[in-house]
Image 1 (cartoon, rainbow, N blue to C red):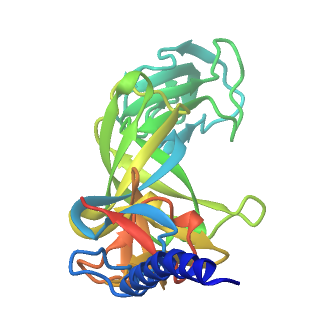
Image 2: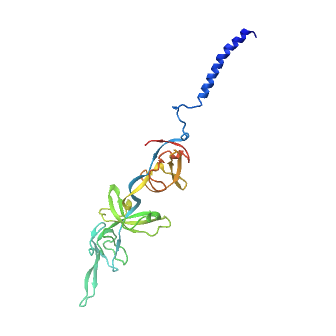
Image 3: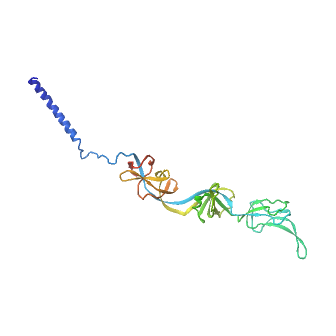
Length: 310
């Protein structure tokens, strides 16, 4: 190679070295972040964007709902005390209100032996108590028979609500508790628990409670009725969460607590009653601890979440 060629190579190579040097400087400079460069998150990429909620104090009335029917408080079965006499007259019919001692039916004359001479008196069938006639089987001309039912009387006209309940539900009740009974067309009657069955039917697994109804005028025995028992005597302050924040896996009920590092952690909780879309939290969660409100089914222990400000 002559001297001219050597000078040409040197002239071309010098700018090339300058470009390579500038490239190396740029690459080296990129390894140091400037003061305004964005920081890389140490939390990792969020698995889901969620909204959180905390325990709320609310006033609830703890209640128990049940179905049942209207039944008489007590029914008296009325018959004739003498045999072989014809019924001469029937004075009452079903639905009639009667007073104690009122004549329900008369019988043919009965001959009674007196001290001076026998005399004929008319036999009578009377009401043993005040109430409402619920059945009348007596007919004029029929013969009276001992033990045969001629009339049936709802004593005092009092009716009750017979509520069908499971054993667990029966154990929540106490005598004197109030209940509201709902009949057809929106009629509402307030009553009190009078009696609670001490056992349940082994076939149906149901027992019953009897609720006295002081204002039962116009109510028909045998009618279907729904009712609500007041278990705590009014409202009570409880802590609750939305139903969507409470999850179930097998027999374990839990919530997802969001930590300061935005990782979610499963926390077992004990729940109580429900009210609409709210669930009472007995224990397991402290006031102010944030939990995932919705979307918890898509998260697992330790996932990172992005929290939407409330």
